[in-house]
Image 1 (cartoon, rainbow over the protein chains, first blue to last red):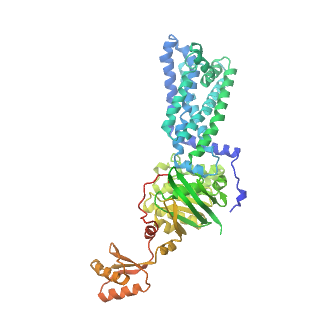
Image 2: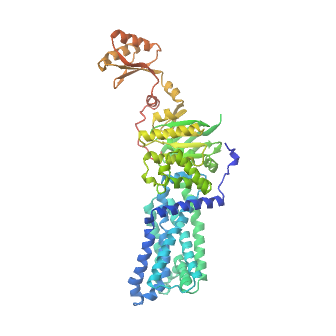
Length: 266
Length: 319
């Protein structure tokens, strides 16, 4: 029997990272065992892109769908990956009510580990989502106007954006403990962010107050940054604003989510 | 004596409902203590508090000398938990579950695989190791669950109703596993609704009812505490039962209980068996069975709590 003092009394950062990666591995294994969980991140981008280009694009660009495809693809990427990021709260909420989470709670692992692990595993969903979109857009005639480095930077920014904003969903999932309510709330939350943005409508055509919001809306900012990185154009300001949003959201919602998870146990 | 588990005055409330109302518990290292009680008695709440899954509203407890509230990380390094519901990932295979737990406990990939293989072998799960848990029988699931709580070689093991919902064969398998653990020197706190289970496995038994401890002691002590011994007679011919009952009533002053051909009556006088034997012999009545026994734990439970253990009361599931 080891003496009491030989046991570490708290979990350090290195161990937290190790636990999180082990638990992310669990999430990825689950995706691989039942790929049906990835259907939404494959179908949603396909339907969105086809709909925007051939349905709205026809009307909005006076028949020049090629030009509209070039314009709308970065925005659809933002929307699709944002959409993909909100599902985690509901799925984690369902997962946390199963016995395996009781086991995690009784083990000497970081309290934040199961949450970070789940958020990391969801990166697989974002990659599948963006990969589907890129392939489809290329087939439809989309062309990157910049180099491969800028394109990769755009994809990395999108994944980082989804990663940070998914913590809002994680927080609500841990707070509300009801998967259906969490999903509903998240959908309501992303509506004003998505539609009051410059993804579909140019900022100049909006009313004054809406234009003001659209200017600081993280969805507008990340869309500008991604557009700049993929189609060419200025990126510094929008990129800075996006990174500031990502940092801000994580500073607020990671601690809130971990706290809610701790309390969740009773 | 070194205590592996020590709890004093544990209280837990869910709104107006008091799940635990000041429970004390002491488990010496290397012993198996059975916590026995009906649904809603506070057994699971006690285990969840001791395993650091929830905080008590009052009282305090230590595991291996570490406070469960102030020092939960150290406590978690000493314990293993098998909950009432399978605490494994149903989407993963048995081997994947055990390897994940090994990795989380700091084993290298190789060591985690080796430990998983060893446990699967010990629990006769090697053949099913790669299969999805959804295809497992109830007994296999529970064995995997037990294996999962043993990956880190815990000093203190909590088994919360480990055989609830299992058929008799699977129950026997789980009992065998628990017996082997005890032989290895683990300290085990086992909750159960089955008196037979506590009787079979535990060194001592603590009886809970409505969030309180109502009795504790070795199984034999508890049986004796409830009042002496029981005389049991099974007449060879069922038709003789009435006459046997008359004899027993006359000799003891109590009218005997009758159940499927067996008559039982409290026996305070050690010479009673001989007296009954003489009277039956004189009356020409043959008996297949005639002797003294300790009361069963069911009878003990009834005497201690005033209600039968099977009479599960409607209480919140969390309790």
